Image (cartoon, rainbow, N blue to C red; front, side):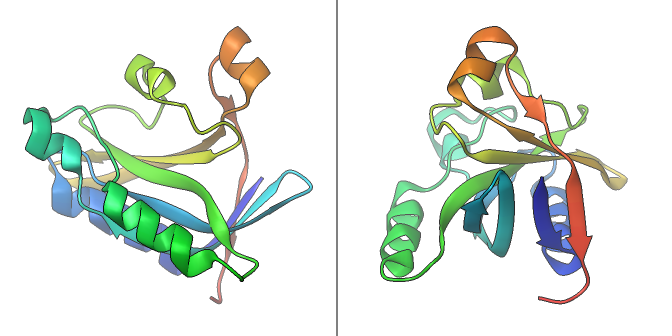
Length: 148
């Protein structure tokens, strides 16, 4: 299960809308325990894949941002536990490209579908070594909290 605030979900959806027709992306910071991804912070990232390829259907988190967030988490209970990205004009389902890029095992992936009319469905999936080998992503339920 993934737990996040409604505010965090709105931020993810807004990032997808702002980036359309390109993919938005960012990091999910929080704690992972007993199979529960507890998101405490959403950190938007520049999509460096756009700069590198110009393609609309790719994302890559800014490596400097990732490093900075990792450093900021040192000595705290928080860590990077996943990331989010948008699927412009496509369903909020993991793609073959997503699966090929899933090198962070045990991360949670949040995907928001976005069209020119705005954000739509949001899904979450976990990536584990045996799941990738057999099926790809495993859908996980999302629990929304009201407070930060």
